Image 1 (cartoon, rainbow, N blue to C red):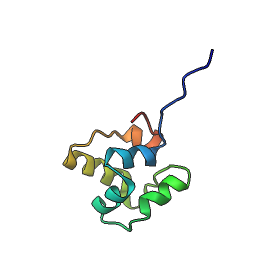
Image 2: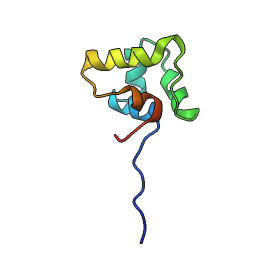
Image 3: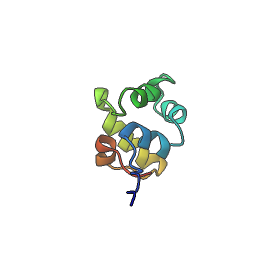
Image 4: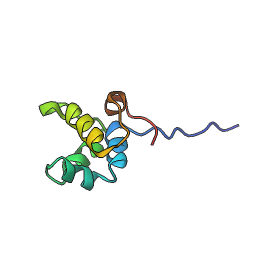
Length: 78
């Protein structure tokens, strides 16, 4: 019997998906277009430089996007 594949996404993938795409999230963060793509390509973690985790939570609240601090750190299901 085969087990189910986990659909859990890494943090950067999950956050980008919740905001529509990596490009859209970069635009909302007013950052370089490749910023979120770099997070995804380099292991999927989101560095907390310049308070990025807090910025993401504030942006999620503003845009009414479901997102928790745990998901920013550990990832989760889409």
